[in-house]
Structures are given as C-alpha cells and as structure tokens.
Length: 151
Image (cartoon, rainbow, N blue to C red; front, side, top):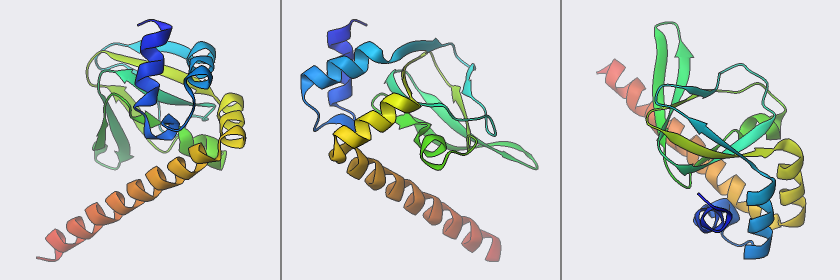
C-alpha cells in the first residue's frame, strides 16, 4: 500500500475524517506500517501502551483475559483503531489484539497522537465519541449477560 492509498484509508477513519489531506499524508508518512499474520498478537493485555494503531487492512480480534481463558469481545476491521486508551490513561493495555487474518496497521506513537489531538480538536471529539460508544456497547453486553444468568 502506497502513501496515497494510506491517506485514502485514513480519510475513512472517523478520528481523522476532518483532517486535511496534507496532514493525513504527514500522519501516514510518520506512522510505522506493521504487518501481522493470522494468529499473531499485535499487543498483549497488561503490556505498556506506547502507541495506537489504525487498521489499514485485515481483521483483528479484541481478547480479554478471564479465569477461563481469553474471551473475544470485539472484532476490528479496516478503518478501526485501538490502543488509544493505554495512551490516554497512561495505563497498561486493557486487551490483547490478535490478527484473525492478515493484518496491516499504521502504528502512531504517543507523541504523534498527542500532537494530533492538540492540533486538531476534532480528533479528540471523535475519540471521545468512539470511547463512549465502546462503553455503551460493553454496558449492553454486561446487561445481557446478567439477564441471561438471572433467567
């Protein structure tokens, strides 16, 4: 995938949709392209978080460690992103991300992420919206799980 194709993908990511193409080109240029094979971990729950990732192609599973092993809680596809929580909270990774098929990502460092947020408040707003959606989705799943146990 060349730089212009990466810019086109970034335009489709809600976080970056309001950023001008020249700045997206800079993000794509400064980000690190990383490829992961099927079954390969991108990051592991509990590891330090030093970057976020944007999925340029492929599919990844979001896995949470439980007493009974890993539990798949979500699937991420092209234009999806992950790793922002560890950066925002300066906390360990809250999930393991594993490629469920060949995966191409753009790794954005903590410094670049903070620069983006400071230069483009729209990125911060979209980040908050996405995080709020994820919290609501998690709450819905918890309510459903609790209801099925009570039945």
